[in-house]
Image 1: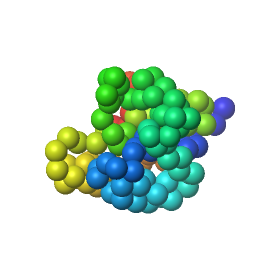
Image 2: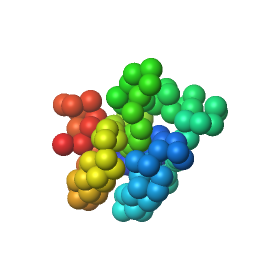
Image 3: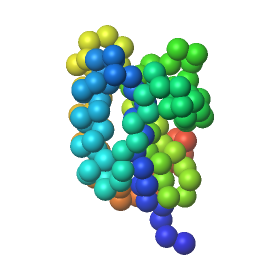
Length: 123
């Protein structure tokens, strides 16, 4: 059996959120290109997308009834989901730095399957 490969990047966001638009949308597009996977944007202000986003965050992310956005997930060919990022409260500089760190790790994300010791999150 072959090693799992990234299959899709998911961005949970809202257009009114300065951590999401344009910061996270732009960086998520860059990450999806680097990984060679499609990007799915889930806007929590659109009811159909919100249902999908809520389930994704509840099952794999930083869940609370009023969860933080953005949240970013990487889906794998074997069905696993890795939670990659949650926006940092406060100034957008914190979320920008979290994205910078994630983009630095992007090459290693696509070369190996999810880390089974920490719930599928990248090291």
